[in-house]
Length: 80
Image 1 (cartoon, rainbow, N blue to C red):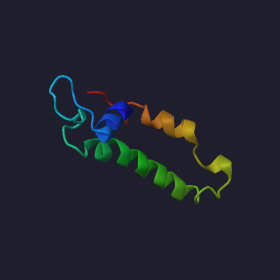
Image 2 (cartoon, helix red, strand yellow):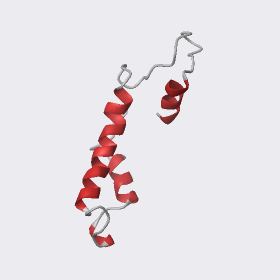
Image 3 (cartoon, rainbow, N blue to C red):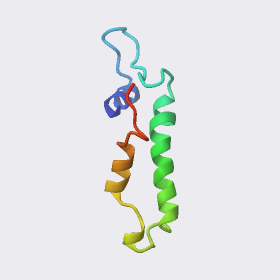
Image 4 (tube, helix red, strand yellow):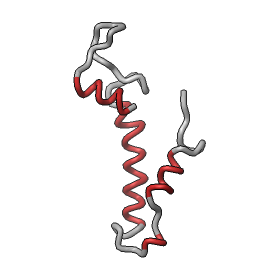
C-alpha cells in the first residue's frame, strides 16, 4: 500500500495502461486515505486521549505492539 501511495504521489505512469497510477484499493482517489489512513489515525487519536496524551502511567496505556497486533487481527484487517 505504501508503494502504491508513493506511486500516486510521484505521478508514476502504469506500464500496463499508460495512465497515471491509480489506487487499487477502493478504486477512487481518496480511498487509501479514507479506508486505510483515517481508521489508523482514529485509533491512535483515541489512545492518545485515553492516555491523557501520554501523561498517564505507562502501564495504563497501550503501546505500539498492542496497536500493531490489533490492526493485524481478523476483526480489523481483511484482504480482498
